[in-house]
Image 1 (spheres, rainbow, N blue to C red):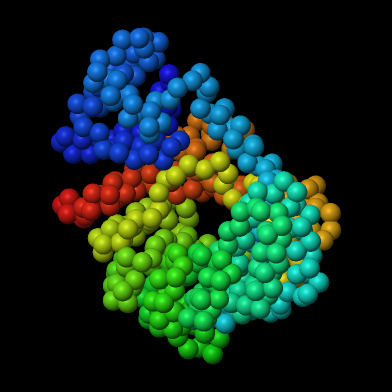
Image 2 (cartoon, rainbow, N blue to C red):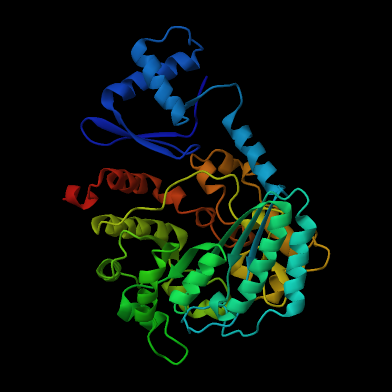
Length: 445
């Protein structure tokens, strides 16, 4: 037996400790007596004295093993994680495609990096995507599709054509199929929701930038009109049909009052118990959105603000969906068999690069250019080869953060990590309160 290097314990109240393991994602409350017993157990395990456990120690040991706080075997956790990470990098039994059938959009967001692009995917590109899937079907066990854009619902016919082709291939080759969508929600009416369900699009991320008055300022229609009310009406029906996650983009202009007002509006629409709410770190990723750079948080600032935002979620009775869960891979850029495809058939490895042809790694239908700089610059980063990452207590969760940020030498090391690196402790407290249906604000002086 070994004691996990990824254990975290913190006094919770007079009688308990908050316990967390980053390798399993397990969060629990431990009594003071059990924590004292845990310390005795770990002393015995580290001394290889594992033949004489009391009944109380044996019972606690079973629970600790369930959360991976203690594990059987001689393998080193770090090297085990490294192996699983490498296996995931080169896994060709899973094909992940994020498809943008159009870059056109019906909104005129003030920070949009897509810069009013137009265009739709041609029949030739559609056939090449189908060809890519067909080529990979021998040995393929899973196909995951994410519809992206622009606004993908502006190209519903393309989504239908491609989806039906994927179903036809699936009937013959029997792989698992999953599909999701990232949409602004304005066109997500009853008819489209029902059709998306038929097309097995069972999950959608919808962006709201705050309450109605703030959202409509940031995300108006192309004609200047508001989009919020239509989106909310659409969500009322969609929430009963598909899994909805609301992404709230935040920057230095986002106040807690704005968040609280949005949460009240969602509650008044009957959505509080039907949706997930998460907060998106708004960043000036390209020159097209450089106008918002001064109002953007860096990752350390965002991490601090994020705690307050999730505190507001808890105070308003919403479920906390963001959890510090472990992963074997951080994003599509780290997986050899994941691609983002734009309407012209260009292949990308990062959502932040979509729409910038200079960042593409090749074209659909041509031999994959694994030597292309736009592939290697992202793929080459391996957190297990970075000594600082190897020593990090949240490595199983963060995995070194965003690979794209690693290509920017001007960024400080702390700005390349995920927010968990900077706010794990207060976020764990909020998650624990959420599980107990308590409000952390009640304990503040």
